[in-house]
Length: 239
Image 1 (tube, rainbow, N blue to C red):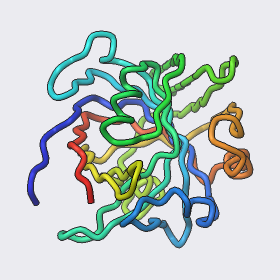
Image 2: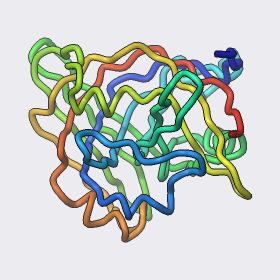
Image 3: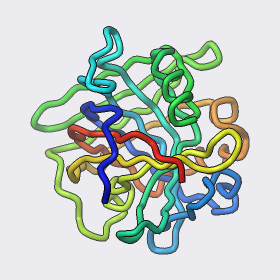
């Protein structure tokens, strides 16, 4: 497979992942051209994901005040047949970051639905437990996603739901006029903690729209924390 140049490198760390069952019909309008929904055991999922960007470099350059920051995204899972077989990827409904330049770049380069809002985080980690909080200011109020895990992270179990959620190595974004941009995301498999407890405080209707209120106010099918790793995001290719 031809190597596409790097666009971004970074560390993604302490990834909170709350994963919800969703009716596939809700997602139909968001599916990029040329892809189809990806499922695990005939179930369709959407995920709330909060994590840290660290040591971020764009085209090899570190941009002052844009190296370390939070992100929160709402995503679902698709696949596309490539020359080597199925390419399993993610599609983002909406992504939040604290820097306007990051949001603008992502919208221009990939046509991703980024918004810049104030954000903050807290991480407390020791041998017994790890507690992570990501918070964001939206509609003049603070909202948050929190997760507490006990012990140490464990390797992914083959065929597990956690493996399905974390092991999607492509991104797909619909373009303004027509078509789809495909980009590769490279990282090793992550270790995960299962949640001991979690909390998601969010005005879902104003942030994501009323379609997602019943889904994201339900109990997640799973909740876990991934340790993360170094990642490489390749430049997008129109398909």
